[in-house]
Image 1 (cartoon, helix red, strand yellow):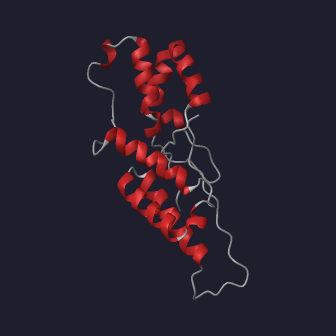
Image 2 (cartoon, one colour):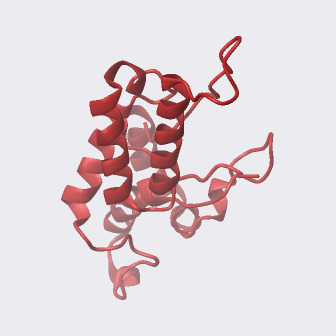
Image 3 (cartoon, helix red, strand yellow):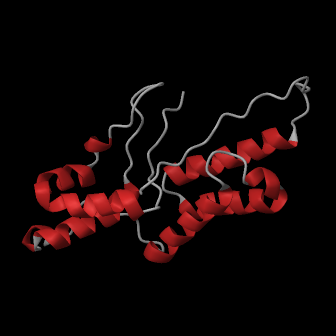
Length: 165
């Protein structure tokens, strides 16, 4: 299923010095910096950040929410699929002339590029505001089988942006 990247808050270490940064704090900062780059669509920068973390702190790299190894696999897939081309911001010009099955398939393939901000803290993520989801809604019943298949089998991550203070 398409998954939203998760991350957990790093608890402050008991008795930790305010002037000395722990390895865990440094690793968390690097992990989060990679997430921010990923959420903004900067896959090459996110990959570099997470590769560094994985090399410098391999055990810690797997301990935050979504493991770095999974994030690196997803970023690698994205870069292999798109290279330097940016994600589409609209359907192709001839999209409306495509048969419904092809339109739905193309839209489901684009779901990993959803980029909507969280609407509060705590709060939900209004996925329906993204143009891809709007188009799938417009496809109606023709979209249901492909969406069910995505929920059951699609492990790609989305780019839903958390609310940042």
